[in-house]
Length: 140
Image (cartoon, rainbow, N blue to C red):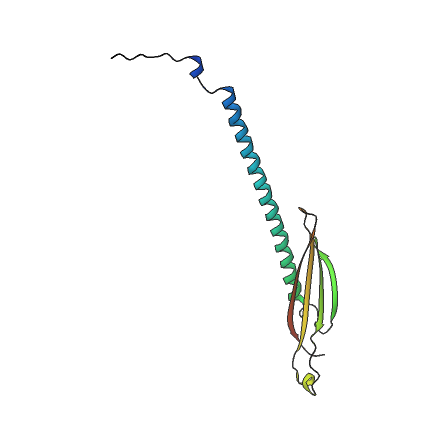
């Protein structure tokens, strides 16, 4: 039995133009899908950082109530800080009108509410976090 060896022709030398174009289209589609995924992840990270900053500001304002500002001076205040708008409200908790109960209290409970607003640059919408805390203060 004899084997016939064939000499390579030019058609066997590499990829055809059509195979190369199909591979290029698949590669570009994969790169575009990856780019969209990275962009969406980046927007999510940015939104999470903004929310973390708002929560930190709200906690700081809750901690300041009763230390920097007196709880007995009930009312509301607001302002802006680092791209965030904030408002703080302090109001005493209603104590039941029982004789001698208010005079016997060593501390008075106060509701402290904090709202922090910011604009999300990705969506243009205004986001908000709100916290309400019961704090104890000295009677007036």
